[in-house]
Length: 218
Image 1 (tube, rainbow, N blue to C red):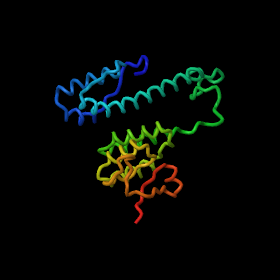
Image 2 (cartoon, one colour):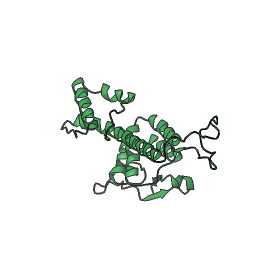
Image 3 (cartoon, helix red, strand yellow):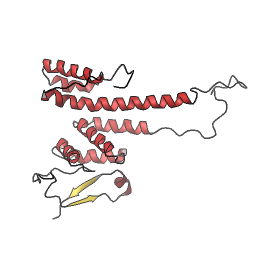
Image 4 (cartoon, rainbow, N blue to C red):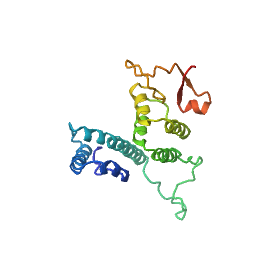
């Protein structure tokens, strides 16, 4: 965790994960979580704990990144002098600024978009895997998906028989998009043998979303 950070978030929907585990494993997993957030670098040979913690770890990382971003923003505001001083010429002026801003700041829509994206993802059973996919895209420095792009990918995944396998296939092979998982696969590169052509969306908005799908040639 970050220096001087004394708390972390646990989420209500984690109960689904814990309810499926034996009580002794739940206890070990809880200890593993607390050791991780206290920078004790816990290790385990228990495959159940490893797989269960992997999902929780991704969320803890996202929360830590948000916390660090807030710290940086607060530090920058502090350098600017913090809260504006109250005007001396007109102490009754309600806004407290020395003068009215000539160019009002535009509202920050990034948080609204992220909230809308989270709501769409949370509707899916494979939400944790899809968030791993978004983290992978970020690590690859690919363009951030818009809400339209996320909805199109989720709609595509909803039609797949195994959404998690579809996502893992793209992460494993460093694909920039999501593709159908085919029964016949090439073990050397793990790409579907029957996919012979990859077509990106021609619509500008869809292309900007970085979403592509595969077509089979007849």
